[in-house]
Length: 235
Length: 375
Image (cartoon, rainbow over all chains, first blue to last red; front, top):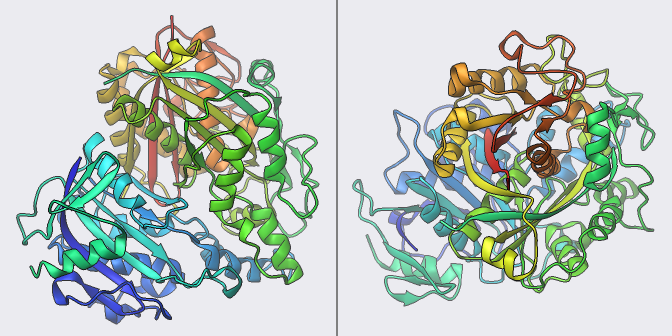
């Protein structure tokens, strides 16, 4: 199973950016700054400011990823999916929603927050903004390598009619009591195409063989090292 | 492509434990929807839900534990090397709500990773699998992925487990969105005014035909086709033209290599909200044209079981194919014009080998499965 890494974008403790702008590793421990609209979209965007923090970092990273791949602008909807791995999902949004629910026994429950208490809601935001009609889901899995999303995406890319899949990770800083100590909070997505991009230079080929991932022929140990290898290509 | 057999099923719903009881009560036109006493409803637009009888959480734990036990008891001796796909939108949200109410630290147990471990252990599986969150299409997509894994030769046996609760968290949210019906829901009825929540646990054991044969399992149906697509339209509202559902349905038909006229019935999502049901009828009328088969929805009987809805409906659909019968659409007294002649408050006879199930959800997601009978 193969896919071409055609774009990379992120919102992490290192800031928000596209892969073509830097070769510095973006997956770092630290505190995540939630991006403002102006850091992500040039034009005014009422919806972005209303999003919960989890959706904001997810949507922003997808936007940077598609921009990096030359795929942000569109005229017709496209069979592109989004598969995101998350450990905590929208837990922080759940807690924020509960803070509106509990004090007055539901009288002040926020419908706006509730709409984002599904971990996949931000994928709907991304799908409608960028015209993506593929499979969109968030999954949770015990995965120290961070590569599970790529396995999932390569399989779906092979087994379905989707032309590309945006795939990666998305997590806010967890509540302190749940932190495991070595987290790199944020969201980072790759655009995996069935073919190399015709709009930009592809970072390289990703292969799934016998349960192992290889980038440009070299075995990949974890998500962080894959990102480093991609950025080192210097497209 | 290898054939994918649906070998065993277990359900726990407001209409009892086990598919036999569920099926029998659906055919009687029973509804599990009743007044809710799990939490106070004074500040909400509805007081109705379809709750599982005698559900009790162990001290400090979630009601999901009880559902898991009751489902697992029905499915002993699952092959230990089965891959696990879980589908739950909110997991142990009752436990999260309680710790937040008490101002206690959030326990690790409310995350999905420990839930996956718990489910794998309960079924005696060696791998923990993953939880798929795609709103109300979660378990439909889990079945689709399980089928794809088996069809491609990446797995021999897959256990899909789905469960979601009637919780104050979700109830209050749908109430705030004005999406709950003040009365029990009426899917596809002209006077429908919203959904009624339900809860369920369901497990579906999928196997390759070879694996099923070697383990002495009897296929109950086959998963012949599947499709998943996003509307790319809105986060909480469906696309009125049904574009995503149409796309998912066309993918499923193509995968199954069949034509629309070969579908004998549709088990629709049918939430009872004005826009969802209209969208589904638009999509199915567009795809099927003059060959629109009988269709039904079970949420007037079971409520909307969120991430577990699709899994329960697959189990019901397999029984429909075996008995060539679809249960009533409870609450649909005056069907929408676009569904007249196809919807009924009584069970309907069907004739054919294929049945289509679909679910749609927040985030614009749509998923379609096509089941094939074993006859």
